[in-house]
Each structure stands twice: as structure tokens, then as C-alpha cells.
Length: 450
Image 1 (tube, helix red, strand yellow):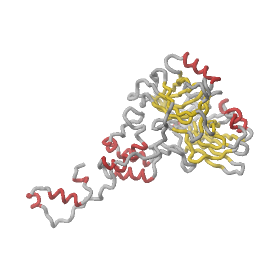
Image 2 (spheres, helix red, strand yellow; image 1 turned 90 degrees about the vertical axis):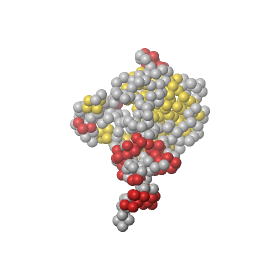
Image 3 (cartoon, rainbow, N blue to C red; image 1 turned 90 degrees about the horizontal axis):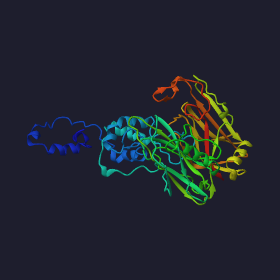
Image 4 (tube, rainbow, N blue to C red; image 1 turned 180 degrees about the vertical axis):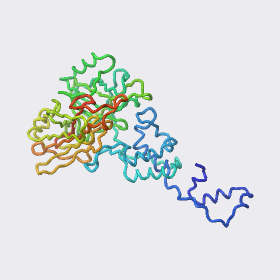
């Protein structure tokens, strides 16, 4: 676009004409009607758009990261203005799966209607760059952030195999005293490969089991397609590209006993432009004591892992639901978090987990009065965007009177089948299982004593 057509007012055109040669001035028909320049530009990249891009997008979309193009380059953003506008107007980007009508969450990375409209206007106006001096800085609240005091790195580099490789790594917990995790994050060694990471704490009772699995598997770590589930395993958190790390609510944390190990379950996604090896590091904030010890409690149908969660082939809208209610919820707490047993609780965070066939899911607290309060709802499930969400305000939960309701909806028709290694699967009967081509329906809550 020429400098002339970037003018913002007719006065600028007058100045441009004043610099013309005398011959040009003599041929100007001053009696002609005024030239219609159209509306002035109301947006520019540096003043209006870069603040949004830097605050919500470049965590994934930068050189060497998992995003498919580099949005740290203003020229590249301007070139992609139209598709970027389309993605934000349809709410496909930046990804924010929760339904905010359910509840408000910390570190909300979604865009407001005004921000989306601003990007669309900028694209419609031809994506003018403007002046770099007008840049106000990134949007606040861009995913949290932690000041890690503990860094635990993989022992040696690992080279993923296949398009989707789920691999686990055992990291020795260094403290000889009881410690509390108060925040977590990741520093991927190869950002283009690391799709997401789940972090687990294996207690001293089972740590040797995973050390043995690691030692017996060739190379670094061991295969763990489908994750790690079992007695003595506690989920500590999940990380996905774009996250700066998340802190647990102030004054709370998850206990780690001496002799435990940290297990990193890393999903590697490879391709023609995503290859090489990875040497990632877990980032952790710790404390020697907290006001309230927290726990992540799973919610699922107790008979589902036994093969009682059938999702028949070629059927849509297959529903599976369960409720945790007294006395079972109290018994579950006594087993999973005995220090919380018999106490009124506060729910500080929630998460949901399904595989490829999931379409929507909801986790809520049911009151004895018959009322229900939503904790987390994902109305358009995407296997690639799973995370935990901390509530803006904790929700009271009394295991003696309240219940937890979980519902998952699946679609096993041909149109909703996953593409594995370039081939779309044909519909088959699916049941509970640890492989991603099986299915799960799990809710998670992060709780403390009230």
C-alpha cells in the first residue's frame, strides 16, 4: 500500500500536493469535486493489535514453537490478517475451551467481543502497521507465571518416534524433607515437539516401580501411551504451550514426601517440520509449609474401568454420567486424602478428561436442596486442548451433604473419527481404556479444607 493511501486525512493529501512540481500544480482542476478518500484508518498494528498478539498468541506462535507461524514478526501478522481475524471471530483462537457462563476462571486467555471486533476492523482496513512507538505493551493476565525455585531436567535427550509419542520420564525429587508444591510450569527443550505435559507425583510406596520401568526401557524414559493411573500416583498439574506456569491458590499446596519421584508424561507431536530431540525441564515452586494442604481428587464411574463404559460404533450423543455422593465421596476422601476426611471443603480448581470421541462434558456440585452449581463445562471438546482451571472464587463443598455430578457425551460416528498417522479410523465399539483410541471420562477437582 502506497504512502498516499495510508494518509489519515485530507490535510495530508494537501501537503503531498503542495510538494508537487509547478507544472503539476498548474494542471490541477481546482474546480473539480473533492476527492473521496474513504474513511480514515481507525486501527494500527502497533497501537491496537500487537498488544493482543503478544499477550495471547506468541506463547505458541513463535519461531521454534508448536504454532504453525511466527506472530512475533509484524509483517507476518499483517500478511495473515484475514485468516487471523477469521480464527478469532469464530473463537477458534486463542483456544479457551471452558464455557464462561458456567463459572469465571483465573488466567482467562480468551478475547473479549471488543478485542475480536478490533482485529476484524484492522484486517478490513488493510492491516496498517502504524508506528512502533505507539505500542502499549502486552495484555495483562496472559496465563499466570511462577518464580520457580526448583528445576528438574530430564536425564538425557529423547528423540520421539512416530507422529504421536507419549513418553514418561522419572525425575528424582531432591528434598529429604516434606515439601509442598505451590506452582508448576515447564521449559520445553524443543518447543516444536512438545504438545503438552502431565505431571504426576509417585509416592515412595510406588516410586521404585517407575524407576524400574525407566531402567528396563531402552534409552531415556519409558512409553506411557494413555497416561499413568494407579495407587500412589497423584496428578500435580498439566502444562500446554502458551502457559507461563500456574500457581496454586495462595496458602495452598500439594505435599511431596521424601523419596518420591516426579513423573513427566510428555506428548510429542512430530511431522515434516517438527523433528529432532528434546531435553525438557520441569519448573516447580515449593514451600516448607502451607496454610492448607491441597489434593487433586478424580471423579469417575467406579465400574467404567471394568469395561462398563461402552460407546457403540456409529452412534452419536452417547452419554455416560456418574455422581459422587455420601457416603461414597467420604470414603473416597478417606482413601485419597485422609487429612481432608470429615471436613467441609473448598473447590479451587477443576478439570475434565476425555479422548478423541468426546464432544462435550460437564462437572457440577449438586446440593441437597436440588440446586446445582457448575464447576466446569466444555461445550465443544477438543482432545488437543486439555487443562485444569482455577476458579476466580472457590466453591464450598461438603462431602456429607453435597455430591459431584459428572457427564460426558461421545460421538462414535464416521464423521467424528480420529486421524491416526494420516488415516481416519473406521467406527468400532469403544470402551474405557488407557490408549487414546480408547475412551475415558474423568473429572478432577483441586480441594482444601474450607
